[in-house]
Image 1 (cartoon, one colour):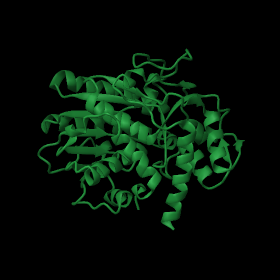
Image 2 (cartoon, rainbow, N blue to C red):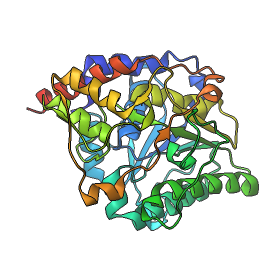
Image 3 (tube, rainbow, N blue to C red):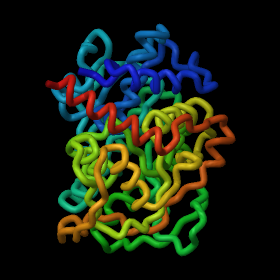
Image 4 (cartoon, rainbow, N blue to C red):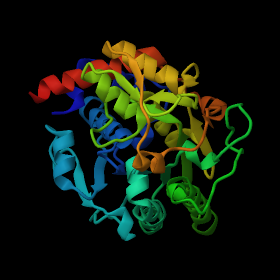
Length: 357
């Protein structure tokens, strides 16, 4: 099954198209997407397939990843070979995706370990995927004369910040380079600089987005982030269990708004620039976010001590709020409020469970 079978999700996908963007730039182009089964990447994939189906975009869509069967399952009933192509790609190997496409116009790089359990158990693989995987795609972009590469980075690149104001794209705080937990943010920093290096040396166009805390019905059961755990508990009608005091300040963004931002930067962003993604009005404390899910799911918020394994993967940033004015100057606006996004997430996750049965 696909989320595109759910009417509410399909309506949110349509909101992406209603952004005032030059969609004709994608007409007939070859678009390679990594991380197509992840939370953000799968929504990008849904949108591209929807564009081809409803707006006759005639784009060649290439999903690059390790697990062909997982891609097939995620995008069913769309068919490999008809609606999209699959290119084997293991970001950790440093080898480029195995595709016979002589020309690739756009690369959207969304593949990365992106949740705390992975950081704690696979810090080496996390770093290699971000650095070697990004290098392989940038090298492919040079060889296939790609028009543009979009790298999905993270708000974690900002590090620990003493001030309480939201981060601008030029703000950088402290990061403990000798902590294994820094595997994710430090390699994202390195990958961003690698993008800048390829632009400077080879002249390829690269743009970067730094999403805040993204959530939505595309979150997977393997995702160990707090938002995903909250959503699963709410879906199941269980209480929300918090493993901290919830005083961390976060900028949230619903997944289809995030994807609209990605395409805004891909099609209108300035080469060599990074753009924050956060939804105005959706910055709050983690505790408030948990309470919103508890309300949507019909439960309460409870507190419990984290395990030592969970502590290893925790984000140490107490302030990761983002200023998105630079992105908004390109014309992007979030369409879905925090309360609506939380409600939609719970309702759609429940509908997915019903469809699976």
